[in-house]
Length: 126
Image 1 (spheres, rainbow, N blue to C red):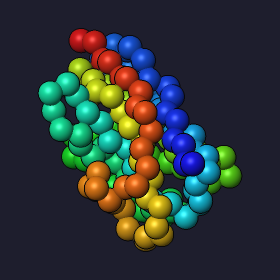
Image 2: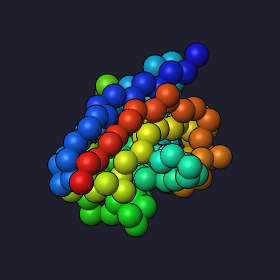
Image 3: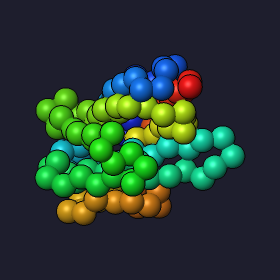
Image 4: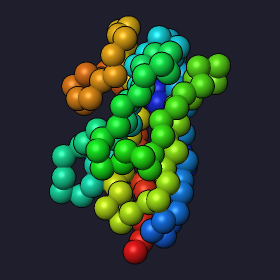
């Protein structure tokens, strides 16, 4: 079955950078719209960034725009999230997600995605 495995989370100080990775298997990766979401304790899962199947279009939540960059390497079936200028409010479990059916749009809602990783914890200390 499809598996998405995130890695790269950790504990960092405010202002630091981290790069998250999401490795996919058993997925037609090159045709899948992908996204990153996060969920802090007691809060709903929220959209962080999304990317179209060919990487031609990306979108970000206002809270991370200019600090985070989403990218993909279809040859490695891997999705990335480069996070910079991290803030304590970025602390959350970060999830990658993939859509099974082909679409040319960036997808914003968790319900748009079919597959999810197990999440990786990012903690930013002040």
